[in-house]
Amino acid sequence: MKFAVIVFPGSNCDMDLFHAIEAGLKEEVDYVFHTETNLENYDAVLLPGGFSYGDYLRSGAIASFSNVMESVKQFAESGKPVLGICNGFQVLLETGLLPGAMKRNEALKFICRPVELTVENNETFFTTSYDLHAKVNVPIAHAEGNYECDQETLKRLEQNNQIVFRYVNNPNGSVSDIAGIVNEKGNVLGMMPHPERAVDEILGSADGLKLFQSMLTNWREHHVITS
Amino acid sequence: MIKKRGAKVMIKVKVYVTLKAGVLDPQGKAIEQALEAMDVDNVEGMRVGKYMEFNLEPKANQSVDEQVTYMCEQLLSNPVIEDYRYETEEVIVR
Image 1: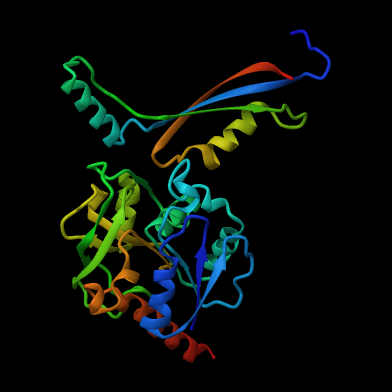
Image 2: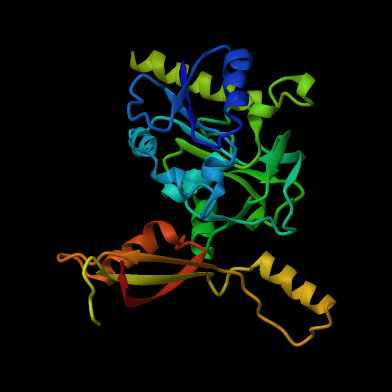
């Protein structure tokens, strides 16, 4: 399975993601610059955390208009998996690939620490290696992770089982303790916590690795059936 | 307006972006608390927004409103949590 890690000016978790795929998952991975327009050779696209374009205007707002995002949209529309982590999640919200928006954390602080999440849906492309309602330990590192959406959107997210991760102790004020959501089709996941920083016990937790392992398992199953 | 040689008429656009009414504003709340600490105790409803201004060269085939609305809805504001309004005036730019 071949992964693309998109690199925007100001991305700073791209190397962590690259490492998680290369050393943790032991699969192929490339850095893909934001000026690139061809994603044909990839089986999954990963949008890393960081501060793309210095968080100017709104987190992720400028990045959502970069060249590569047109291709990421098409990639997502074709049903291929797209994962946005932290700033990557913010970019997915700004492009409209996922519903909602991010506000500053309730306490106005940049929060950087491990948090506990529950797996609310283990039937997505990204979460089949987890048990349902499993508690996982993954770090967060953000100042704008206060997820916001209107009541109607929240109802839709709940009805379609699109809420994938919830915080056990809400750190940032997110609506309904939301830490990660998928689109209706289930192939685009955005989450504020950083699974790529939790791929080895030496990092404090290896719980994040299962997310990438789920992607690999599901890709292989699909690949074997269709090829 | 009298146009001097080498000068052109542009539209000065002032855009105000604010959080929607129902959306809690943690920054506004913090500022209100700081004001209270300064013994200013008669302030309520503090909201923090953004102000942007730019000059727009008029186009023959598209109105200023159309252009500014497009910019505001696609990039300058996030319609999920923000509202926008704008003012325009003609200016002469050298």
